[in-house]
Length: 368
Ligand SMILES: Nc1nc2c(ncn2[C@@H]2O[C@H](COP(=O)(O)OP(=O)(O)O)[C@@H](O)[C@H]2O)c(=O)[nH]1
Ligand SMILES: [Mg+2]
Image (cartoon, rainbow, N blue to C red; front, side, top):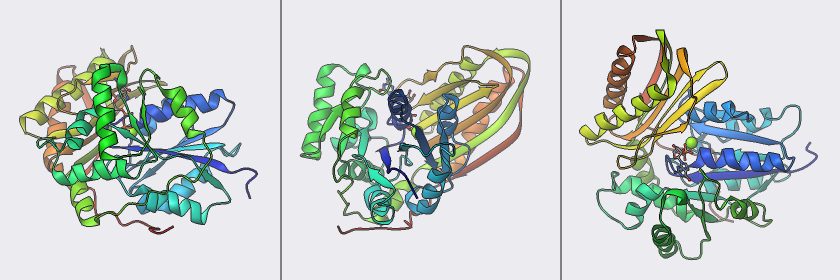
């Protein structure tokens, strides 16, 4: 039995909202306070860029792959147990799949009811992604996603104890005010925090907010699982990993950025809106990461390696509003193109592409 209760901090939000960046920053803040931290990532399939990104930064990360936390609750709890074997963690940071919602009823409430002696629940924060979020909250058509995917994005925020308006580093103050007002109109009474996971602005306030004691994770949704399932199934999902070898060294960062840039162009041409494209290249302890979070934002090298390489492990994760078969062909063509121009080749490639299946939660506790 446990000596202390582990603080369970889950941070939700749509695909590409900034969850992984936020959790990395929070992990460092908890560790600076002398606390031991475990992180749990989650995806519908293996080979996660997020897990590798966070592990490369030196964090203790467990992965629940193959189904979301809600549909694989037992593995979530099992994975938490494997973290911090030397020392039971003080804090668990959990990142749910970005297309998942109803997490209060299917993850937080079950932890409270079944594992109350072992865990205490921190306020459940959900990150607003300005690019897609603004259009969805304004009920604009052409948000790049269908009304059913927009339904998921809104439900995610509806169940939050607080909503984080992220990316304030790149928004002007009037835009931030507009977003915060939109959030207030849509979810009256829900505290709204303004943050930048990239610069750290607003994180002292967030950290304090997360440290509150109280009964959090109580906003159980009234949700239509048919719309939710159909919204999720409109996304094409692809996880692919491979080794890449070349005769001559090439810039890892340029390769990563070129992959994301070319994918973006190819997807726009097919009218397929990216929810999140990410790729990590790893070689002997150093790594680079590139990301794209919507068709109208710029691809960016989120973590630069600064290295030239001849051999890497490459992982590509793509979540795009299109047929997964088309997504797989597109990724394959882009990889062939960028590798050929470097005289590089790939081997041992493993690719999974699919539409997420209907969510069937392990537990669902709807009433208090
Ligand atoms: N400019 C800016 N970029 C951010 C911020 N937070 C996240 N990003 C970038 O957005 C992309 C997606 O972030 P990530 O944390 O992977 O999102 P997730 O899918 O919710 O886990 C990455 O390229 C991040 O570097 C932020 O506050 N400002
Ligand atoms: Mg992530």
